[in-house]
Every structure is written in C-alpha cells, then in structure tokens.
Amino acid sequence: MDDQHMADAAEEPSPGAMDTAKQKGEQAAQTAKQKTGQMADQAQQKAGQMTDKAQAKADQGMDMAASGLDQAADTIRQQGQQMGGGTVSNAVNTAANTLDSASQYLREKDTDQLLNDLESLVRRKPVESVLVAAGVGFVLSKIFS
Image (cartoon, rainbow, N blue to C red):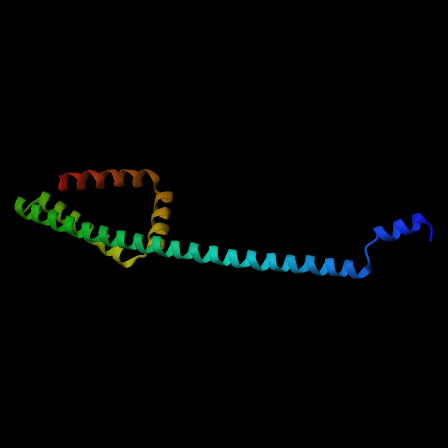
C-alpha cells in the first residue's frame, strides 16, 4: 500500500467503532429522554399540589365570605326590627334574605363553579355587574362603619 492509501485507511473509522459510537449516542438520547420525562412528571406534580393548595385557600375564603354575609344579614335584620314596620323594614328584610341566599350559594358551590357562574354573568350583563358590585360595596361599608 502506498502512503496515500494508508492515510485514507487511518482516517476512516472501523465498523465496530461506528457501531459503538451509535450505541453510545442512542443510550445518551434515551437517558436524556427518561430524565426529561421524570422532570416533567415532577413539575406536573408540583403544579398540581400548588393548584390544590390555592383551591383550598379559595374555598376557605368563600366560607369566610359566606359567614360574613350571614353576619351582615343578621345585622341588617336587627336594624330593620329597630325601625319598626313599614316599607323600609320590608326592604331591609328583603336585603337580609338576599344576603342569606348569597351565603347559601357560596357554601354550595366550589371555586370553579363560582368563577364560571360569575364570568357568565359578567359577560351577559357587564354594566349591571359593575353597578351591583358598587352598590353592595357601598351598603356593606355603611353597615360595618
């Protein structure tokens, strides 16, 4: 063999070396795929845990809001009884009953259902939703101040 053929032969990898390199590459790819899958599973579990915690806190908040509505209804009823009978007393009683209904609604629904219902209502009646929120805020501020 002349020098050129020997140099060409030395540059070409042997078939065994190519197979070994191919196997190593496939093993590395498989290992990377497994580790990526494990990391994705762990991230998904963490996200699920955080979602569950947030949901539990939101449910606790809804329970507290329901209790607050019950207290507001009781306060309104007491003030209505002090006013005596008549139109104002009937209006106060109606407001207290509405607060009781809202409290019961909060206790019966979970956060997902509540958010879906609220979103649907606001989409159907955006102006009315803002006015009701402002009115409720005003009434509650007057009651608890």
